[in-house]
Image (cartoon, rainbow, N blue to C red; front, side, top):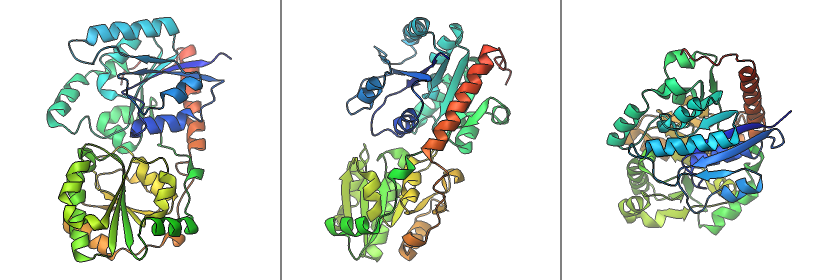
Length: 375
């Protein structure tokens, strides 16, 4: 059987991007002898996964100009050239705002399988950009015939009820290398000694420091908790444009905060954390919470996040400062006694499921089954 050829269209493949991380977790497990996955990226960046992609035989294409209404015809024409020259069996768009360019091009070139894959529950955190994105995406059903979502909540946000109840809709879990994440008692003690955390309850944050993650609320939590109990320390793992805001607004308690920046050893660092916080206003399905639970770390997250992320160690809280402060101050770690469903997000099983979906869609397209989209 010939390889099934897939073009992933993604904003970027940066190492600090949640979407890129999800894609790479699947990419590393998908059988390269059966699937050829190429990438069309919207911009070049440093610190990306691109070298690994090339080493595994993927072709990478880049847009040579920024996306805008003004440039849409030029970008569509360039996309059409890529599709024409490479004859892909399917196109999977991971940047859902731009169906009117990329999936429109795919439909024009008669690519049989055109997938919209959502990773979030919001177009943009910027209100004006959000309105523009919603407007630009009004006709996505016109160009899309299959619909992927990282969670039910994400799917319900982006698609209508008819789509979510159809046979063209699939939940693609944010799987992880589950074996890389495990609780190690000796490593916990070693890290707590290294970072002067012994005798403290260690509260962590893991992820991009952006407005979407509600860093303003996080800073208030830190101030309230430490002002009432100095035996709490906060460990911040990640970087982003809200980092300076967080440092500035928690400066009074800087001795109780450790900023570790972007790290490649997150699977180890999670061992020194007793409780992980994620007060996001919106999320698709947060990888940080999956990784933390796999390491026997309890998580407090906002109740706007999908319940599907719970592996047995998650509490969902309303975004109320008094509630969060009270729960954190009352927290007692019970790492060794937690019952975690580690199989729920095992990338080995998730990748097998995705491969089966791809194969089923490919076979349908060969026999013209389900091509018509009347959703």
